[in-house]
Image 1 (tube, rainbow, N blue to C red):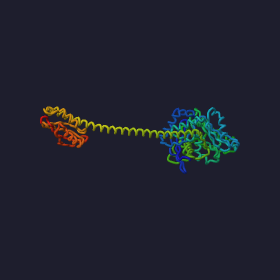
Image 2 (cartoon, rainbow, N blue to C red):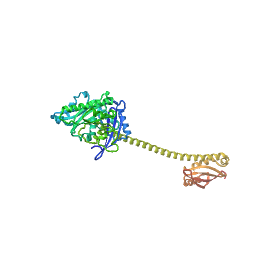
Image 3 (cartoon, helix red, strand yellow):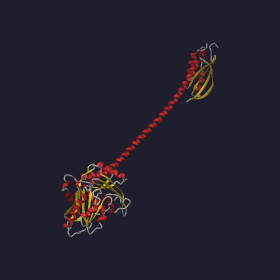
Image 4 (cartoon, one colour):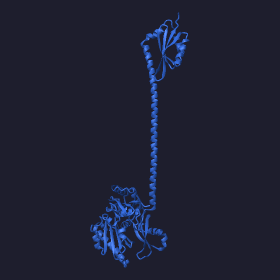
Length: 500
């Protein structure tokens, strides 16, 4: 199932280009495009040297352009890269993949390293000989570097493709499909590499790769060198297939800074008998079938072709993906690991919150228990204070009025120690005597507290049975509430005196 939106990431020695395409039923819309420089030291000699710096630049470019699409296809930036047409014997048709792998192992440029490779069939050779395949190969390490850069830039890269194939896909509908009666040559200047390929009747029939030396920094010198390379290809076809078409349609695709402004006129003058057009990011949209408000934006045709591949646009049968299945599986494993880690993180967060809540509730309960205990302790303390206050009041009364006590204790005919001991023995446990008042010579009033009326009546009855008391009567009672319920009482006791 193809996505409806895809991101193409084109990386060369000097430029990063992004293109976001959206596929509808009958058209392809260029939604967003962005271009930015490669940071110094991030790429050198066609290879990634500083993945962290490059991924940061891609991430920042995405952010500036407000690009949120993650699913991406990236261009292959690797040196060396082998691109070659391979003739295959008829007998290897059933084991074509193994045959190609065996051939790639003998490429000197890849000796000593694991190779990442892919291929596609392109039909028969120039003279209708054996089946041919177009092979692309580089070291697996460099492909892994590209995948890591994209991953660090928060892109889920699914395809890594040579820039030439992406460029062909972008221009195929307008520059290749309509032209049957001539040769179509595509010259792609990408970074420090020149790719030349030729189509005849929609069939891919030739490829050549050349390094652009540092001496070609001058635009005019680069233009002359490019004309010589194109002229050599034309001469090759004139010799190998003299009966072939004489007309040539040439499309040069380059960064606008690589060639001079008059490059198109210069190439037409140097390569006689050909139709030449130069396409740069500024005018590439003229030959790419795109719609939308951004269709005429400055954009890399390679980035557009990469996104088209991810959307499943089959403009040609030329496809290759050097991203190994191992890398794709590793990406899936990383994604699953990330999901698992997030799930574990959520579980740990929930557990942490649960512990925090339990601790909070425990502290709150403990606080409430403490407050209840404090309240209970406060009530007990208040009762003790009230009792202490009552005792202090009695001591004060006795201390302030010693005459009353002395008057009682000094009565001539009363054996007070014996009488008081007898009253104490007859006092119930729930009755308490607080005051002892002498109003008459043979009369004493007892005042105090009891827990019930029954206890007071029992106390009066016990006093009436004393041999020292002629009679005891309950004079007054009053209910008293001081934190606990008690009954205040007053009992008058009449004593029998000696000699009466």
